[in-house]
Length: 516
Image 1: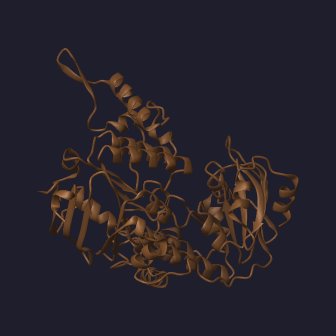
Image 2 (image 1 turned 135 degrees about the vertical axis):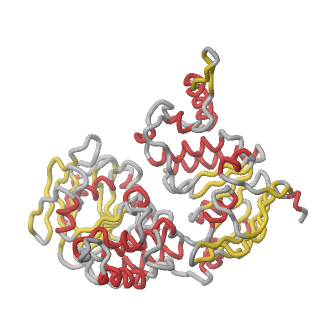
Image 3 (image 1 turned 45 degrees about the vertical axis):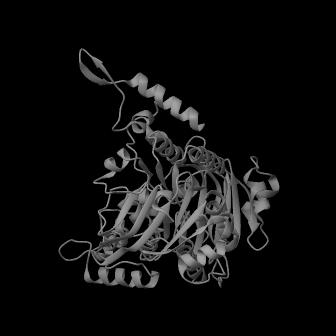
């Protein structure tokens, strides 16, 4: 095909970092007015390729053309000037600035008073309102970003990219934090952008979204280009097999755990925070995987964070092995043999500037103090190396900075961190969010192995298939209440959704939650 058919051509792009070849002769060709999905496992090189396009990385080799003309961007600002915008997977707004200040950061409208330029706040407010109105967004331009939900921040970033009148918009996991209504809204925005001739490069691990929204799909694996196909000729199984290089007929590993006696009992737990959870009761058996389902706003995360001592409780009790415990903070929780994998690993999980070793040892630091007072000791490094081996973390060294790992490998490091504390109860909040299907299977295998060894696991998930495929029982929450508990073997999506939209807990469900 003639180069003029494409708004973007990336040919034989190569990029290496110390100890790893991230991109090896990758090809990407995108047409104007289309959605081009870019897929692959975590670590396949998708984000690295986009950063080479966006001017954040200097490529080692290869060419980039826009509308047939070879280009090379010195930085992200240069790429923006040439009509390329990028919505990053990891959101990094200026939280103490307002929505409208974030919206127009670096391009504030100005007015002059006595010849001196000042920011025109009135124009900035009106421009923000106009931009939001065109996208159907309802966000207060004057509120500080730190008070927005993750999904609202994501929609702000999408609006910001659209406001730049870009010809190419890169969307890296744009729906990872959105509700279904917001996803539908995003797809409507994409549809309107396509009509204007904008090309969308759409990176996602959600196969149903890819097949629904995209025109073409390019698949990468281990930093290499595998191929490009028309979306309407693809199936989920085909995409997955090309991504992982093998057939993946079973999405979930076999489980050999046998839930035994009660280990954790939660009775009448009420949050001390306003508009949070109220009167939640359930139990967790030894060797059991208890899934927690619910729509956005169900207060699932708030519940597990309170159990772990990160949020205050108003009333209720927690028992472990039949003994009442008082958990005032995370140290108490760790002493009670609990571990918590938080929902936002980059915000509340990893220390990005530190190494894998430091990130792994930090929760158990007293055990690994060297004579010089440093956390790293010979035993510590040995345990980290063993953790890397057992969890199959892809990294050149345990001294590599964790921020250089893919999301899936970062998550494995966090599992390793907590396993070194030898917990009996693991609280996992969205453990596979933003992780590809191949790595998801590895995470599922870790969870299944832990349950088989008698560890008790609470797993919050927004993915129905994940809950149904991994849970022994599923507790459903709605509006801060536990509305029912379902047997994992017989639960259905319909039954979960019925309970997830049941705002009042019935007496039968309340009794079941206490006695199950």
